Structure formats: structure tokens, C-alpha cells
Image (cartoon, rainbow, N blue to C red):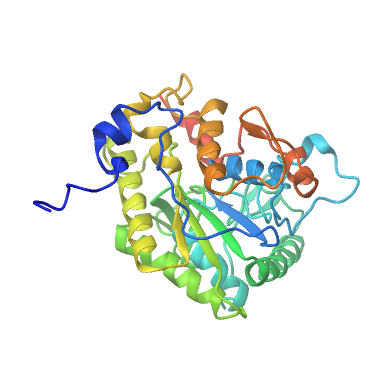
Length: 355
């Protein structure tokens, strides 16, 4: 060879790998790191976009875990509103790696300090998942009971799952200074009040994201018989608002760049971590923004279809596919009943404060 680029595959050149390809069928975009067996128990968590992945995996007949199902008589039209059948547990959206790290630590080594809670109209809200009970709890005791029940279910999830799909969504978060916990939404948006003496804004760096996810892995694997496998994705949904003193477009670029770099570094370092390029499929220049809705933020169903089609090329559905989507399978009917193409997203509430 005269140079190291002479005999490399076509997918490694832009002209043959992207320019000459149909955007709906780019070859070699994703090559799985490992097999997902039919018996593998799959769990999901992450930002709003992860809800689409949860739905499609469930529809495709994978052995999808849902450890916090709704009561038998619970109204079907209220499932998503109360956080049921959305993820593998009723934790709501987990936007940051820091949230995930702290959740696992709370499961296996509960902190001594009081967990953050908010009040509104005489009701109490779990600040770590404030959107789970839209009307809050009647007392702190009731909130605590439900929190402990949630943690009990999570211990089972974290020790029994074989594959964990996590969508990194944000680097920005608000921290409760009394409990040192990362919150999914700023105080005062859903409940509670903002006080700079009690809350501080944080924005994770790449090394902090890597450290948080590594600690999460170490925590759950120390309580398992065998190491878990992971699939990381990055949400292509832009920030709806930023707490940084700058333009939201710049904050979005920073956040997504950090998350993508962190996911890449984790994938290179650990053989049990795979990266799936949902972010690139939606945001790359060759797709020309066609998968975004008119608000240039939310993802249209065709975009989700395209993302999952690439995934299923490497991990074929266990049930049949109807058109471009996986048809509902026996193992996935429950989660499909409570989720549609419009995901539950606390961050979207920030739009109400726009001027």
C-alpha cells in the first residue's frame, strides 16, 4: 500500500458512504457490537426521545421489561399521563447521566439526607420524578411509600436486565443543594419554588458525563451475577430552553457534542457498550432536516421509522414488521397501549415561559 486509505471500505469515504447513498438506506451506518438474544431482558431509560425506542422495541417482540405496570383497573387513557407503560420503570424522563448515576446509588445505598420534594396547592411532589403524579401526593408519608416501592422495583430491574438502552438527552440540570441530587426539571416549573440558596444550575462536561455513566455501571454490576450490556444513544431533540447566558442554539450544540463525545469514548473503552447512531440519522447534513417537525425540534414519525429501521437491520425484530414499523407482538402489547408518537416531556413545559 502507498497509503493507509487505499483499500478501506466504501463506507469510510464521504462520497461513496454518504453522497451516493439514499438517505433512507445508508449502508454500513450501524454495525452491532453484540447479539441480542430472544431471551435477553431489555430495559430502556433516558430523555423524551427514548420513549420512541421503548415503543418500537416492545412492538418488535423483544423481551421488554416493565417492572411497574399500572393497576388492572387503571384508565387506559391516563397511562402515559401517570408515567405507566412509558419506560421499563416509572422513573419518568432521565435526562442526564448524573440523574442515572444517583438513581442507581439510591437503590443500593440509600442516602442519609432527606430526598428533595416540592409542594403545590397543599400537595407534595417527588422532585426526582415530579411528573409521575400530576396532582401530587396527599402527604409526605404517601410520597415516601411510593418512592420506596419504586426503588424496590428498580433493584429488580437493575439486577435482572441483560441489555440496557439509555438515551443521553441533556448536560444541563438543576441541583438541589440540600440533597446534592440532580433534578429532571427546574424548581417552580411543575411545583415548588426557585430559591438560589437551595438550587444551583449545573452543566456537565464530557469527563463528568463519562464519570457519571461509569459509576452507574459499576454500581449495578456490583450487585449482579454477570455484567450488563449497554446500548447508548444521543437524543437528536434540541434544547427547548437554556439556563446558560447565551443562545439556545449554542447551548444545544454544546450539550449534544458533549454527549456524543462521551458516548463515543465510553464505547471505545468498554466492550459491553454499543453506540447506536440515532442522533446522526436525524441531524446529519445529508438528511437536510427532513425528520424535524415544523418547530425544528420534535421528530416526525418518519424519522423514528428511519432510525428504528437501521436498528432492526442489525437486530431483526422477533415479530413481523408491517410497513416500516414493527407490528405489535405478544411481549410488547402492554407498553404500546400507553404511548404514541407524542412523548411525555417535562422539558416542553419550559416553552410556556418563552417571550
